[in-house]
Every structure is written in structure tokens, then in C-alpha cells.
Image (tube, rainbow, N blue to C red; front, side, top):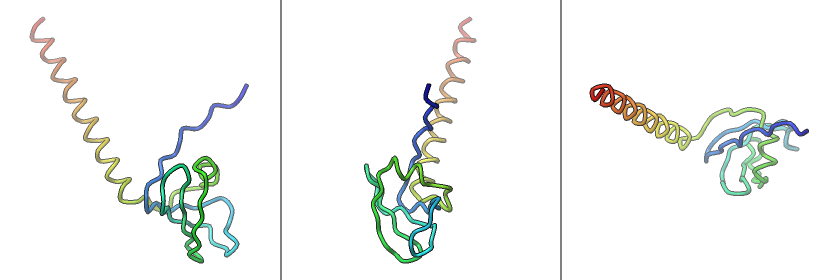
Length: 100
């Protein structure tokens, strides 16, 4: 039986990540510069750009140093959507209580 797979990690432009193994220049830290099936990264130490398949990058990421501005916008949109869904559910419960 295989172990349950981890949910996919969402990457956004300008995310700063620390990988498990160092680049030959010695830096562990990278910035996300391209998104797609392959993720583009720029090394903080030497400025070198590399492309890694998304699945491989998910395995190599140790932690996020900083999330990009698109992450903040996505989280705000999710919170607003959840708040409006909760408000709609509350209104539906109140109206059904009035009918009964």
C-alpha cells in the first residue's frame, strides 16, 4: 500500500523559497520567476536561472522565506468568498426559521 500523497503546493511569482540542497555557488535560497508545468527559479547567490519540473520542486522545497504579492491577493479573495458563502448560509437559515 502506498503512502497518501501530499496535496500540491501552490507557487506564485516572487515567492522566495529555501531548497533542501545548496546550489553549487553555496546558496539555498531562490526566487520564483516563471510558472507553468516547469517552475523558473533565480538563485539568490549568483543570479543563475533554472527550470525545475513542478513535482521535483515540490519535493525539494524546505520552506517559504517570503510569499509573493499574488499569494496575498489569492488569500484575500478566498477569505472574501468564504465570508460571502457563510453570510448566504446564515441568511438561508434565518429565512427557513421564519417560515417554520
